[in-house]
Amino acid sequence: MPVGLRYRKGGNIYTQEMHPFDLTNMYSIDRHWQCGSCPHLFFVSDEKMYQRELLAHCENFIGEDKFSIPCGVDSVVIAEIEDEITEIHEIYLDKQLYLSNLTLHKNEYIEIPVTKNSEVMIVGQYIPDGPSDKTIPQGIKRNELVGQFMHSLSTWPNKSVHGTPALARLHP
Image 1 (cartoon, rainbow, N blue to C red):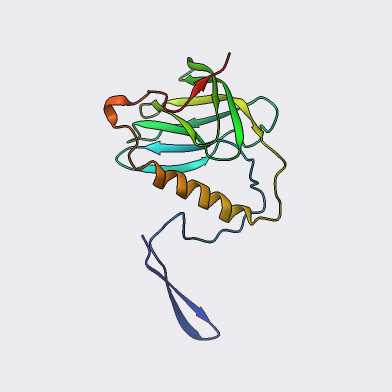
Image 2 (cartoon, one colour; image 1 turned 90 degrees about the vertical axis):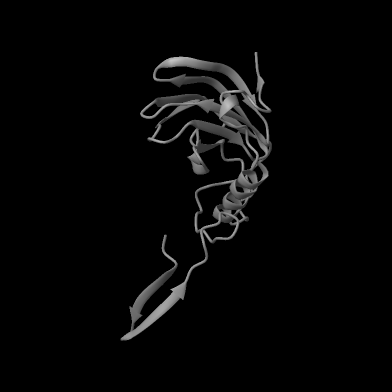
């Protein structure tokens, strides 16, 4: 991982040091993401890695999202870390129904065991508790929420309990 950046400007060479990567201590320019965005995806192996938002295009309507599992990932975590409700109608692992009718509220998540090269498809939607506040620098807010979630769950379940829905409730 780089610890600094060297660049040339106007015939001079400049160096800028960088701190270690930390989601709670970084800048981001991103006008697309909004609070009331969607659930978030994490890969779990020996460490927990933030991947991306899920169902980002499914505010108040049902859609689907797909992703593949890379080598070394033991489980995935789908987490709702914002002021909204995520309704997961179905989760498919390699085209086989794994789970249906799951509702996640703020700070709730589910951990699902996976194997490398698995294909995961999520069908669902998210419902914001209120309108998005477009005056907040959204990329920074997302990084703050993701960082807080990762730090708060530093004692996630160990490998012997993968797949146990944690703080999740099934909806009818």
